[in-house]
Length: 297
Image 1 (cartoon, rainbow, N blue to C red):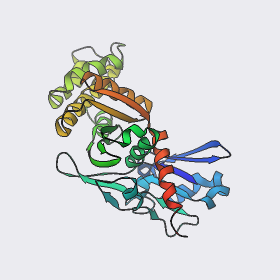
Image 2: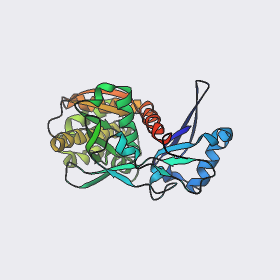
Image 3: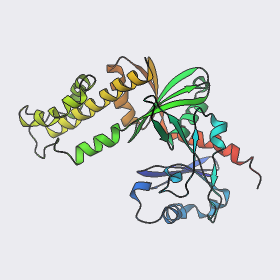
Image 4: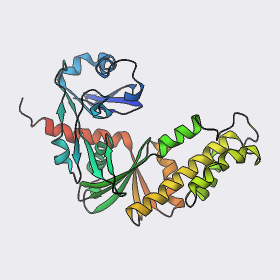
């Protein structure tokens, strides 16, 4: 079976044949220039001989703008409850299933949703069984960062932070970064300085991203790192306040982003460990595929 994570920015597909892994990539749901069905068919064309085995997708493939609308399963939800939300794409030329997303009342007592992150979480429980017992806080950095509480293998509640999207907006559509260079100071130093500012007064600190360049002789790259540090420190502080005291988190995602979150967690006095996001999502889809095999033809 072909398995894939179709997010807003990327489509990542995996198949295993004779013990070897093959991968294909394509545009995310937010970057399509043709219909989702046409895009998927085009990306999958090199694997035409494998399509009869079926395709299993998670993420934005199940959104209103995706391949086929798929409902949310309410938390608390374990992998069995998640599997009951599986949706089959009715008009597909080959067997295609889409994983359900999850919904909850978050720690701010507001409606919240996730699509794709639940596959990573359930995959993490498969890869590290110690996470399947007791209570754990799993953090999934990204465009919309998720902080999830998992208790005895069930996702109990989660909170979304718009940190990644806010960073993208502020770096591309605001006046904070100036298009000229001064010093050659680097972004890592700016990031570290931002961690020291953002935890207490993030909104009050944001304009200093601009003034650090105007009157502080800082470079654009330093200011970009400074902005990132402010936002991540703010997320850490707010997450701890909303979820209660957090001593340790498990970070699931791409290495570069997870590394930044580990630095922010350490600055906030939170212990952290890291797991690979792609390995987790594929492990979660492998688990879900086992439920498909039990569905009568």
